[in-house]
Amino acid sequence: MDHIRYALSTGQSGRNGLADVRFVHNPLPDTSLDHISLHTRIGELVLSSPILINAMTGGAEETESLNYAFGEAARAAGVAMAVGSQMAAVRDPVLAATYAAARRANPDGVLFANLGSEATPDQAMRAVEMIEADALQIHLNVVQELVMPEGDRDFTGALRRIERIARAVGVPVVAKEVGFGMTAEAAGRLFEAGVAAVDCGGSGGTNFAAVENARRDKPIDWFDDWGIPTAASLLEAGAASPSGSLIGSGGIRTGLEAAKAIALGADAVGVAGAFLRVLREEGTEALAAAIRAMHDELRLVMAAVGARTVAELRRAPVVVGGDTAVWCAARGIDASKLARRSIRSRTE
Image (cartoon, rainbow, N blue to C red; front, side, top):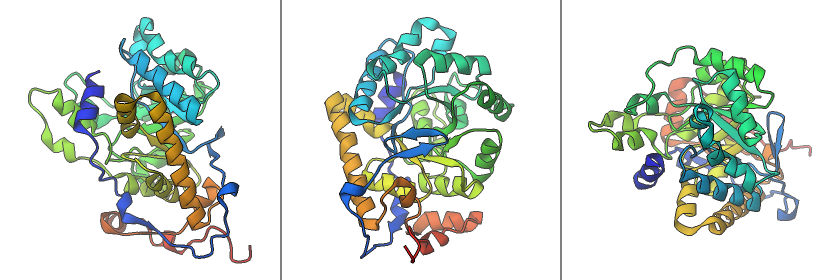
């Protein structure tokens, strides 16, 4: 509950780098809103929407009602949902109901289980079974743990554990950063280890260094400005494995930002902090309405650029400028090729 309170009070910086991305206008899009499909895939998992309610909470009595409400909103809006880290319930099964509430609210929906990289294959399978999950997120939160007063200090062997989990659980595994960004090197190693997707989790959204610093007697303030923004994180991960499934997350609040994340390579887009605020301030029905509004905005962008599907939107030409372009140049990522591509060939 500390995390929920401080996530709301610290807010989101909005510096996710997506303002550096501009779509190339298409005067002849040859599209119709009636013909646009939002279906997408994460590995072999088929989703009816690229929008995902990303992992937030669970493990305390008060969080059961939150996960139930998120599950209701996910069902009403037709989107997938991830629960927060289930390690508390793996260690104390009494807490399992705080996560399973999402499944009770959404019996037929797509749910992602969630554990940290310290988990064993047995613990991962228990987390999946707990909520009858369709996929499993393994979150990577080194900086959060370092700032957290009671956090972990040993991060050895994480990749090997993720590889063993990916082989064992029987559902797609998503390696998820929690807001400090992804690198090409790390993404490449994760795909080689067998994960189905990488959630780039860039900076610009909920800042878990700031959240944990708010809980410390002596803050480590310089970690509050740590991380790789969402736009650069997506370009990093895409450079590592162009064919691998990517999820864009980190401060995404609108359909336009979601569309930009997809154009940078994301197959789906995770939203957490913005949805949490709507749920806490306005309720479940308002959250479902906000997700539907994001769908509407996304369709408008797709119609404007001539993308009939999410896969086509991933090929829409965009120009990358500002700090994101500087980052790409320094890291050897050719972002200029994104401006020269085309959704469909000239002969179509």
